[in-house]
Length: 182
Ligand SMILES: *[C@@H]1O[C@H](CO)[C@@H](O)[C@H](O)[C@H]1NC(C)=O
Ligand SMILES: *[C@@H]1O[C@H](CO)[C@@H](O)[C@H](O)[C@H]1NC(C)=O
Image 1 (cartoon, protein in one colour):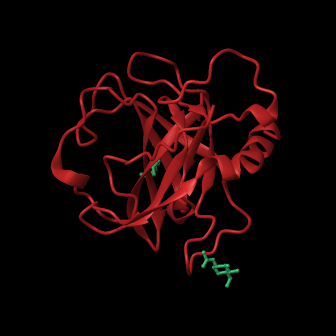
Image 2 (image 1 turned 45 degrees about the vertical axis):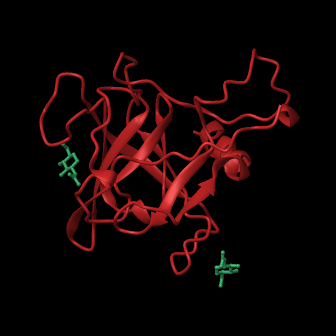
């Protein structure tokens, strides 16, 4: 079976500093329990990004979201308010792709290891990474529409295409290596 190319469009823009919601429509409450919201410091100001929880203690995001003091909020519906479903977890270690090039955004991908595992709830659940048959996946059917296939790198400010997506499957060997070594 061919893998579907599912592009994750984040409800929050990934470029630093922006605060508006792309497209202006609000997501259904906790319809994306794998969504992570990042806050970090870069150039002495507070920036924000989106990400995807891919394991209880790992978040996949774009490398241009690198900064210091990165905190991840999971289970948020409205990030401007404190909600009981939210889990705020600091990042222990951020690993940018070694070939990331900030000039042309090639390999704009980064893995964040969290200080502790997220508690799985109705509002917080990891999204499985795309797996291919070549890697000997015999564990049940391939779930096509609930699998990470792309990560948003950058796009126009109004959230309309063209946006650039990193194909996650291309980075799977690197992602697996990083997650295994921690
Ligand atoms: C992350 O959380 C820590 C502890 O709550 C806090 O001191 C720090 O300022 C936060 N970082 C950002 C960028 O908000
Ligand atoms: C980005 O720049 C690097 C270094 O100059 C180059 O090797 C790479 O091919 C470029 N990638 C793209 C997508 O333009």
